[in-house]
Length: 126
Image (cartoon, rainbow, N blue to C red; front, side):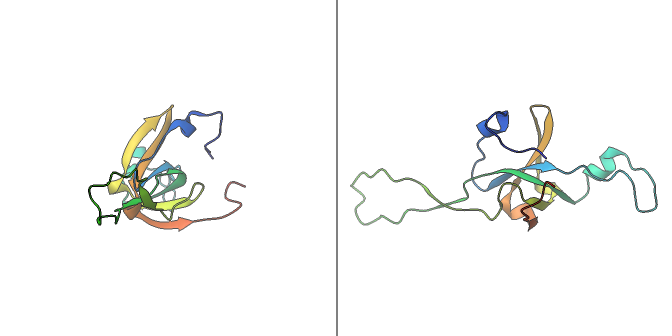
């Protein structure tokens, strides 16, 4: 499994908004009956799974300080956090995923709304 560590380039990535960076699991290249499938068939399935690598800050929450508009304030943007966490296994809709290659590895960026289910476990990588 690929993790974000201090010595790799993934720590430099910043995921924006309600997006999630996922490392897709290797799809099975055989059917239940034993037929081998080409990669193009398995990559185009509607539902895929993968490991959550990085998560964006979430949905921005609008500020509610409209009482004194003439005052200048330095407000920090507040976010509603996402349910996804680094290390989760995500089941997501492939049609909403954006494929990309970074540092020789294939990843997808998926909006939180496209994630159907999360599996969270302490011993995921064992």
